Length: 339
Ligand code: KG4
Ligand code: ZN
Image 1 (cartoon, rainbow, N blue to C red):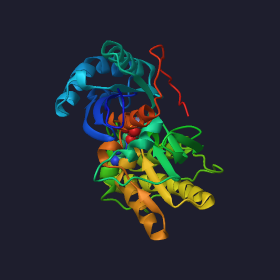
Image 2 (image 1 turned 60 degrees about the vertical axis):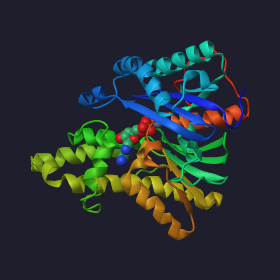
Image 3 (image 1 turned 180 degrees about the vertical axis):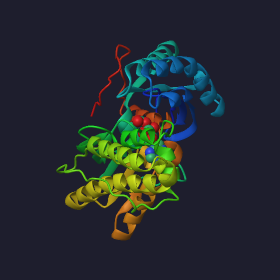
Image 4 (image 1 turned 180 degrees about the horizontal axis):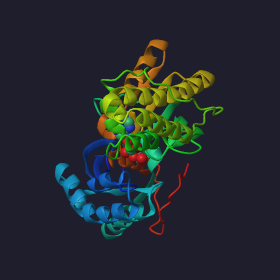
């Protein structure tokens, strides 16, 4: 029997984090994630290594989430799982595990779109988060996506703009790699930028029309800039790391905010949320918060709900469960987005 107090076991395995959460309705009882350190040395996620680590992690991660929630498998009423987008091998591990649980416990399986889940992370009932009213604009910024979405209902999304090439998270990670910083580089750039001058170096602007983004040119111009400066001064990176990080980060954030403000203005929407891994960035959070001085109500997720986690998968599961939107056990992963 499923209702608004149902116990949902949620699984996320789309990239390199194996995560399991237990929810009672829209309240998170536990949210446990195993990160994969193995990719650090390669400067990016190696898909085959990610799938193998998911296989190792999935059983202990589910056990830990159940233990932290003080629950047993027999109390679970539904299984929510990421169907995509993501890496095929990684998705297969989580999805097949979820299907087996659904079959053996004889409870419904609920497929979840990972990008929709990043947005709905705002609906997790938590004292540290405020819930946005509809309609609101959500800027979803992660390692694989950069999107501006108009959200009109829990499960109704209008994708209005997105990157035509790299995601902003990639622009952070690839620049960090050029600077010799380990993967994922976003948090490292954020850390160094805190002591830097954001206006010292300038980077080329993009000419994208409307609400779409492009980051591949910026990434390349960053590489050329570093190559040119280190040819003149071999220790350029070491001597200027904070200013480089602060200036580059500032540049990326201006692009994100320019497009977001354009949409808020043109659509006359006063509620603005950010989500996805890059929404953990301290400067982005600060600049979004500052929009409140201009009459925009802002929604910034709690840190643990920014990067990949199963709690956000569970909350989509909750809204689908209320609508009895269940999935067949015959589904396979969708590496591309479904809305
Ligand atoms: O949402 P997420 O965990 O995974 C994907 O769905 O891609 O996002 C990961 C991305 C990585 O590119 C990582 O560098 C970036 O989020 N990230 C950050 C910060 N924390 C994570 N980027 C900038 N500043 C941060 N503090
Ligand atoms: Zn993600």
